[in-house]
Image 1 (cartoon, one colour):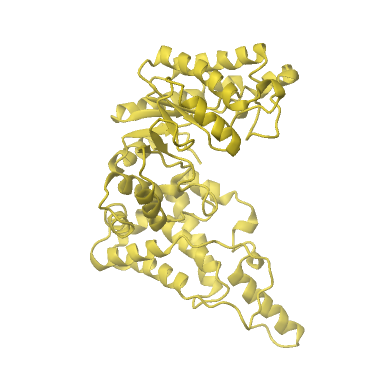
Image 2 (cartoon, rainbow, N blue to C red):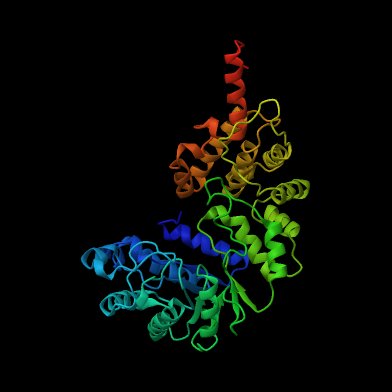
Length: 431
């Protein structure tokens, strides 16, 4: 859900700075998902990536870059199919080349030379052992040793163009045996400055990163709006403090906005709590005041419940009745009464959108299905108006993700539809 407009990126960068970030990390290019034409300074994609780096630095923030170890352009593997990395053990995506084949590795390194020389600034470089990257062939075994050997070569290229860059290794996604081996190897790798969450106990400061907590995959990858998990973020960040040198919440879209804010605030201020962060968000980012801000903060703390696409039979006589999703939705909607300007705030509509989906995920409640469906349509219209890229993303989802298009899929819609069918079968009238 990334924007192709540098203006939108600049706004996001400034917002992150205001929230308390001192570094912005991004993934400039996955070669396996691109073409050589995308990798020229004059073309849109790579031109935008360089502009993003300049915008981050221009905002007075440090620049972090996430880059896979051994991906190439798909065209390269079409020309040299024998170079293809062996899948099976590691998290490969598109067009990975085996780093044990000298010619294949030369092709990988040629792309990295171009990559590092073009980017205007790199303060941190993270390349994980997998996700995405790796090779399961015998020549690449044991993979932890091959990964560090090849990553050290790429880190040397990076430091040739960015001599002060810090290098971040990561073992997420590999087996525990590989993790243990990587831990031993990293402890002797003086060129590695940090580890992204794991392996721990390797004598390097930890950048908290991997699923601790995960904020972008949780709750549907943005299909249902944000999934606020402020109490979880507070609990996790307060418990995990040993050797932590920084925090990098992983995000793929504006649906993570409130969780990004919570991660930044709770990491920066040990006196902050989920409650204080929710209230600060309601006041500073939604523009609410007084009792309305308090009420909305309470609604935010109660959100993050599972969104259920439930095709199972729901007994109309014994459907679960849970008023709390409806209550949270109504608290959010009432904010418009004394604060009409909130309707011009995309963050507000993101929260309302999530609240509507959580209400649709309960089989029965006070609010009518048609009311919720109309609310979802209205939210999408507001998001198209205020955040066109995200609104476009929502409009292109499969119909099963939209209760107004697939009523049978959602518990509350299923309950009403099934009740109707049973009544008609018994010769009754449509309820």
